[in-house]
Image (tube, rainbow over the protein chains, first blue to last red):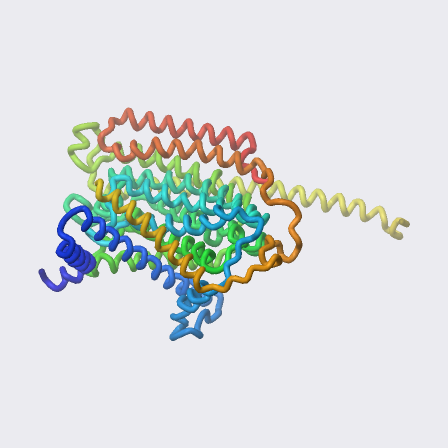
Length: 427
Length: 118
């Protein structure tokens, strides 16, 4: 095995060596399998928790730079030790449970949100052969586990017995539940193109290999990628969709009453969910770990960092949306556009097939994979632009109506004012 | 496949234990001096009036109902998408009709004003 191969498969080689060591000590069997799985899960959880610490630092630094501030710079070089200082503070902070809270629900909520956020990572492929569980319902599993955070947030809001928490929790349910629909719908075209729900197969389909053109799905489906990304931002409850913790309106939303380690677990859940959504976006639309020259895990890291940077960028630049705008964007724009997009993709993918086997089975026109990508790209862009133009026209009608109303009110005010010329009426 | 799902189970237990250990370790390290004022419900300094466990506005429930519509639709769409390459074009037409029915339901809710947040 050459040096380059060794570097490319570094994670797999180390993992296999540890597995061999465990089998050598315990002997092959179910106990050894269980120990290997436990070690793998422990390493995965620790790695994700460490990434969470890095993410908090990166986010504070980048958002500070966007807002022309310096950000953390006291603890260590460039403030790099800031997450550790925060961790020590969280560990030693007093942790109160309000007297009127529902103790079980209140204490279980942070554990549930953090556990299920970590659980998502068990099905994500990080490099060829490096995946916790390659299950055939991968995408479905990710979305299902991701929605567990909704339950945890509702538990936190209800269990706190606090009005702010409850308001935040109800907003969250309305928001997360609503944005799950475009998320689900925009995964469908990807599954149609790759023919599998397994995340490993979806990455394989975008890798340059026999029969595959190696085009990431964002080229096939730009509209789906955009809608999935917006839904992902809303699903993780980040700015500009951070209505669940709108600090200027409802203090901190569902986690008003939490402090100390339980608060840290909510933060962990939020950031780990963001990381999971970034990686899932990379896997579904940007080709996952596929890429030339560099080792595959480095490619995954670069792409995920780029997606997370866009998350931070949005947070640093956009103001928070209103509740009615949030709901209108979801149900009146994203869901109809996604459904139209699915219908277009279904028809086009059935009419323009890329393999002779499919053509002989169902008919259709045989085209090159690149041509199929181009056709789907054009269809996506046309749907997006027509949707935007309908929106623009509708917004114009609404704005003109509003302006006419304001103008008529002004005219009425002027008419009333002119009656009083020569002295205001006596009270 | 069975070992894959076993890993998910192991991961669930490991993640839960790890988070539990974090909370337990913090409970050993942190000070614990509760007082009646500290344990009050936080409301920006005001004394809380009444319970938060009250009946809530119904509009959230309506949005949840519309969500159920699409969620069940999604469950039906996923297996179809996996089998897309082997089904005949007739099945595609049926699914498009199905999506059209979903959109009719959304349109009905829209026209009835259920999507208007106020």
